Length: 412
Image 1 (tube, rainbow, N blue to C red):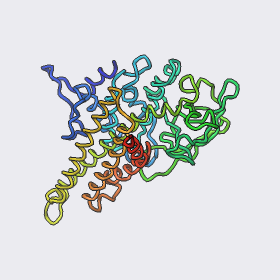
Image 2: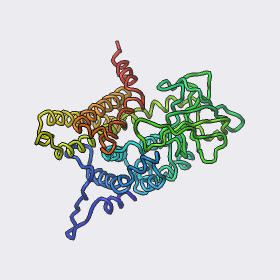
Image 3: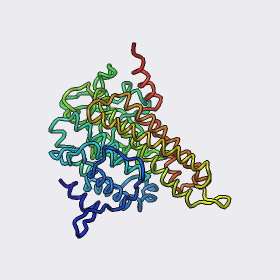
Image 4: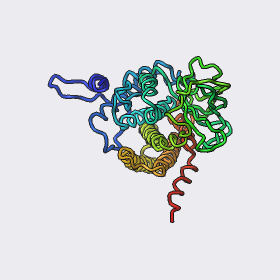
């Protein structure tokens, strides 16, 4: 497979004696130690970390100003194998476990980026992989694996947030087509998306049973338009946008799967993976914050001493390191449960809310240790701080996560 060839070339050098020496990982941290990572995972992590160091870091500022990640980066990630790691080889991927996707999201977050919408692209892939027909998988997955097409999930609407049963966008059968009308907002990758996983009502009179998912190809689609690219507190490299559908016609083969009314079930089936990914993104961002803060306090002096030498600094860093270890241990339990098919919605909700809360708490303390410089945009910690806030909102607000957990406890 391409990945196995790339890992030996991209991630390691072979000495004359035949021993493998790993290239230094620019995002390497002394902790935590993930028990599930074997040599192949570590090699992949080194490859992804080097990719971000070489391809992303030199362009960080420009892409922030542009408000979008260019197509060339998507295609380069596809060539490396990041986008199709868990897609079977039959559909153009590498056929690996979700651990490899987890590695990618960790390394992206450890590089200090949450603007590239790789996670949403990956979630869209898993909708098609889990519920699509064979024709649909062969039609869309290879282009998503290669980065030729970028995916988005058109779920949230101007009048609805977490209550997906109340969406107003409709997809009504008309002859051998669906006629789509409605609007979406806060759509990650919205302006770039070639493929949309659209959440719509095929039966407007019903709530959950009226929801279906459709796969929409946007290029040249009459009646489809991208509205405003939204200005945000953080995640400024992502082209988050509004989407509009006015008498859009798509073939009935756009329905994900073969049966209408399965959309809510399909969404609920994939939410544990989505929320676990958010937890790992939070973990990687917290690791990044700790790393850059350690670098800062070791060099910065106050009252003739390194900031690192003050007891308050050392205690705050010790607390952050401990929270990171605890979060990693819980997320790894959840990942193991996902592998075994036993990860429950409430456990995934715990991962999402606890991870995002820990992320925000750790980054806030790390910014404080930077003093006034932490408020300056030239320091990465300020970007991490702005990007972290939405973690407690998207993927289901943390209040919704707590409600899901509480319901699981309220059993006689």
